[in-house]
Image 1 (spheres, helix red, strand yellow):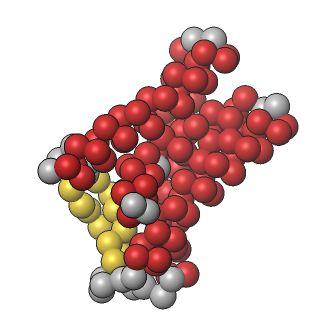
Image 2 (cartoon, one colour):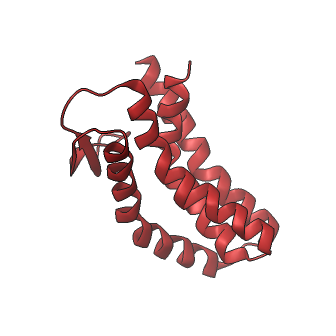
Image 3 (cartoon, helix red, strand yellow):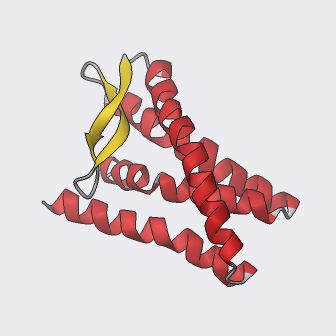
Length: 139
């Protein structure tokens, strides 16, 4: 139960903080909400495919399927087909957050492009539960 509580709190903070920061720096615009929603749906499948790529890079067989989400609802997930090492798990968990979150965020910040910053923040918020699990495995 402790992991569950830590994961849910971390997930909630990481999911809402990027949007709050973006709104503070760009102003509260309804367009940001629409763009965020569109980006979320356009990157959901690539996010999961990057988990699959991470598993494959680590030599673990995996398949796309459904799993129980952080709040009990079904969610699209990549499921390892056999036991894996902690190292391979960390690669698979970290890859989407880096590729769809950190990379666009850094590129947007360096180029001064707010849309890329928003894409990066959405990517980080989508990876929030992954980040929570990754942090838990690093302890």
